[in-house]
Amino acid sequence: MTTLTDRYVWAAVRTVPDTHRADIEPEIREMIGGAVDARLAAGEDPAAAERSALLQLGDPERLAADYVDRPLTLIGPRYYLDWLRLLRTLLAVVVPISTAAVFLVQFLSQGEVGAAIGGAVTTALNVTVHIGFWSTLVFVILERTGVPGTGLGWSPDTLPALPDRSRHARLPELVASLVFLAVFAGAILWQQVRSVVNADDGSAIPLLDPALWSFWLPWFLGLIVLEAGFAVWLYLRDWSWPAAVVNLALALAFAVPAVLLWSGGRLLNPAFVDAVGWGPAVATGGGWTVGSIVTAVVVLITAWDVVDGFLKARRASAPGARQPVLVGR
Image (cartoon, rainbow, N blue to C red; front, side):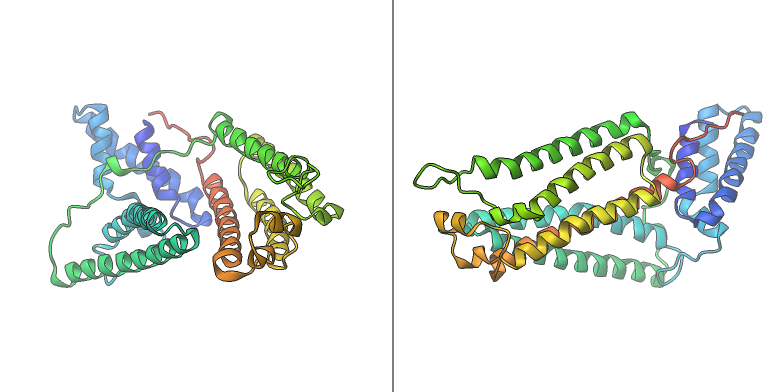
């Protein structure tokens, strides 16, 4: 079989519980192989025979759902997968574009970052709600009125690509992580000795409160070292459920004290704030346009990092995710 068959099997097994994956994969491969053999015996071209066999089996997600007896239901099962595919596409395309456009327009017109972020977040929520509601309503009407064929049906061309979990594929992520961590650590050290603001005697005024060197700044630098080691571990071993838990622990170890220090007004150096004239709201991490936005950004980035780690662990643990097996016939 070719990669097309492996993509079909991957698309099917990734949607079923772990307890069923070891059983469903060989059964699907056997069905595909039998259908292909019958077409080859009839004189059909191998590539065309494989494609025809996959078309005969139909949508791999529907096949997997039938195998585990999982209903695909919106109001009924007829348009469920068409609705789900369209919804995913619209959310992945429309929401980011509209959010970025609103942020850019408001920032250029008003010049306030806080207002632009607030408008962008509101837009993202509104667009998401409207896409979910109206797309669902359209398919409910289609299903209730019995309108045939939506034109969004499945074909082998829509099969997802096989995940590449080789070390070579993970190398760019390793390099990017190490570079970012090195720059982050360098910035913490640089702001202490070569700040952008100097006192009257020419000495640097650090951005971060020097009192943090008693514990918290060494804590963050130590976390950076651990993150670098974790990045190397991921490069060598790939994602797994234990790796996702370690990623969660590292994320919380950074985010929780950072938010507490910021909200308590202990992160920034008061002398630096006075020198640049930022005002008391910035010094104490207060105010909606300063404190809340910074806190929200840190929380959102941390949540995204944690969720992304568990999703990568789930994908890496799926059958065939590390090294797809090609079945020769």
